[in-house]
Image 1: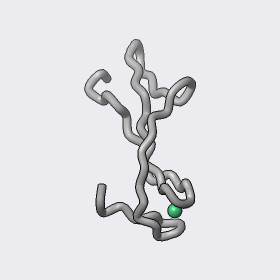
Image 2 (image 1 turned 120 degrees about the vertical axis):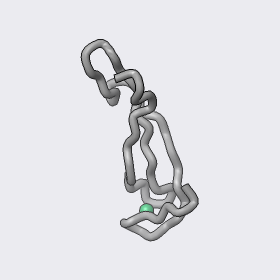
Image 3 (image 1 turned 90 degrees about the vertical axis):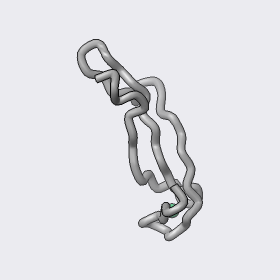
Image 4 (image 1 turned 120 degrees about the horizontal axis):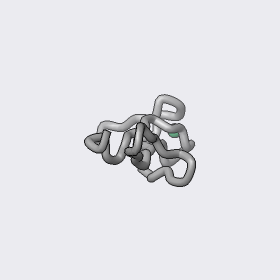
Length: 56
Ligand SMILES: [Zn+2]
């Protein structure tokens, strides 16, 4: 992820975090956490990823 560049402030300081609680993606009986990639400077969220897409 070294090519990250924030579209809001131009910072390259990327961070990732896991969303939990209600911020889960569910489909039928499967569910997975979401991983957020965000700017470590201004907090702009660049992308969400499903943690375990092969469950679905
Ligand atoms: Zn930023």
